[in-house]
Length: 129
Length: 192
Image (tube, each protein chain N blue to C red):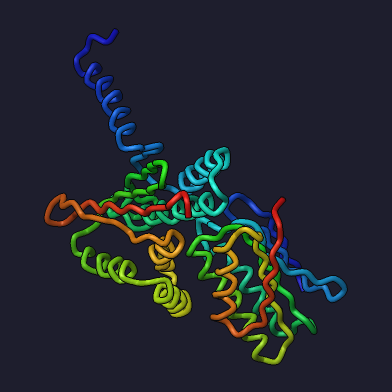
């Protein structure tokens, strides 16, 4: 399957979607306040649709955002809902939600997504310094 | 020295403007079109500026967060825009005031009078909520709400109140039968 690799900018996150069975890695990190959220996230959602047809034995998505605006929060939910579908179809799925250890708001945002979607979640705190 | 009385008037205005800003603790003020580039530029400017102070990370992040949502509100919802076809780049005022206790982020933009009742109802609902009801409202909106054609999630005000823990203070100044000027302020306490 093709690999998506998008470099991060000051308003769009860095995205890696690599389902290579040898060394798979899926991560969205950085900041998200794109001018056009739909245009930015559409290719990611399409990739996930394609991936869901024949996913790996275990799917791990890392979300390590330092900031996202409310418009992006809606699209992040759309991504998580795709993982929920995979989980409900019986696949092994895990979301690793990374947040800076001093950022309660980001920690809470992860907990809320965990409440909203039926997907196994793992909260991972990291230190910035 | 300026001789032309009109020019003199302008110089006087600049000085008056300075005094008014000082008196009202205004550290930043802008009036005009809010594009995506401006939203990014103002937010990163404030971000790097506050990073130099001893403000806590939480306060820094909240100021950044409220700024972005406020600027995007003007951009998407102002009834005044240079290009009437555009769904973004609305015009408005954007202002930051800072005192020992708090930051205030204030926006002002033109709205159509016919949209005021719905807007007011939306804000009142959010302002009357507590931590738990706002959390529920947020979850409900993010789950069942649709992204508007302008790319808005309808979550901005809810998020602003949740992040600051403070109600939105707002008022409408009537311009004419069709339009009013909507002013809104969000408070971020520096000690929280």
